[in-house]
Length: 287
Ligand SMILES: [Zn+2]
Image (cartoon, rainbow, N blue to C red; front, top):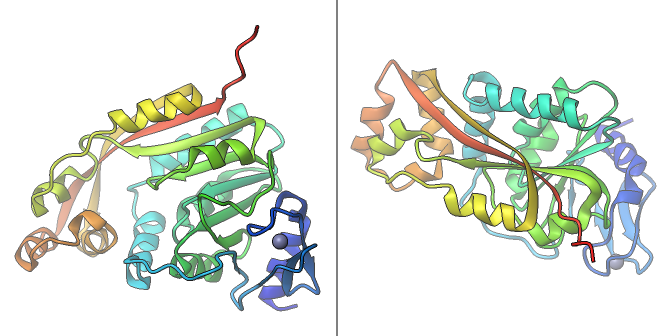
């Protein structure tokens, strides 16, 4: 069986949780190579095993080189280790019998895969991103999860089909999240705090971010059941500093001198400063 057919088999097991992004009808896997709805809208599985649900291609500044750097930072450095451990801990405490975890805005899939690897039981990761380059790399690297190219504003997922939605350092669409989340499901959103990557920000002359408005918007849509602040410094070596510059959009407009000064350090302590927000669907007021 080819890896494409194996991916098709995995998708087939969860096909009842999908919906056609065009007509919103149900989808099924046919002959382990194509996904179709009752109105004959069809979506091919690519050779790497992912499915592209976009009706037209989207151009993006996020290229393969950026995603390769991101993959190395996420899987080989300690930068996000505490974040992954915290998410895994919350999932184990709050969610029994996990079926699938949707990562909305998964990029090249490494956050999702690291988290799924740490969970017990037959939980399947479903990663979705608008960037085909990112999803292609994810599908080539991580065969035990499902990978979709798709639009956050029109998820190819049925209503109330997901136990958990992850949204890590990525834009969100809360109306869609609420539609596809089970009534007892949770959303976990990771937002940069003021000092996130401050050493890189200082090197390229960028202002600090503030997460306040993101946190209050999240609270308008969900009941905040957990709010964890992660703050630590992680030592990166020179290779990792180079990858950090390549993966971080905030460094895109930096001058070559600024980049050189930052990446010529043998090691540097880099600040991780993140909010992890955990939300549940708000129940309608009684009355
Ligand atoms: Zn359709």
